Image (cartoon, rainbow, N blue to C red; front, side, top):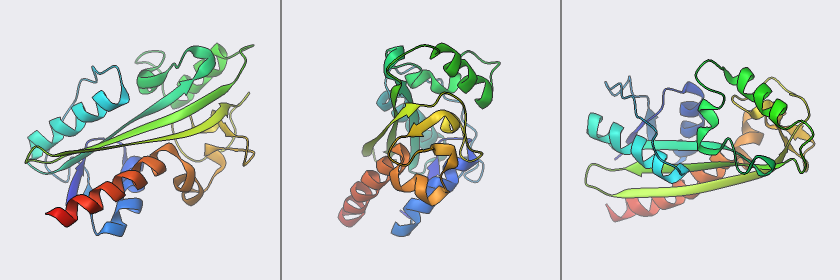
Length: 198
């Protein structure tokens, strides 16, 4: 098992996954490279459920081990929203910029501004085995967007310890502390153990 299919159309996620999992000699390929195109209805109410739904669907379609990441931003003042709906926040018509502008609008006058990014990674194997790992990164919601990097809510997710938003970090800095970086690191350890048993 040296190849996983990523259950996502997001090329930036593919780059992040490969940067971390290549250390194990595991290559992550896109759905199109695996010859599949799967649209998964994300009906779960938790990151764990949605991550499993995506990984299982792509594994069944491709016949290869599939890895999925379900992640989102949980804002305390908004009772954990947007949460699992982070990518669909505000409805279909909004892009990344529209979504974080809506978030800033909804946060106007709200305190505290504490929030966390959560990532759950699930890998489904054709033999029925499943590996899951979770990572979290605490921060606050900035008052205005800063930085050009990253994607999604990165320009408004502020890290008080670094005095920067996710969008102001280099990819290496972000991978070292991000929710996805932590989840992938935990996953990498579990996958390494799993591969030893094969």
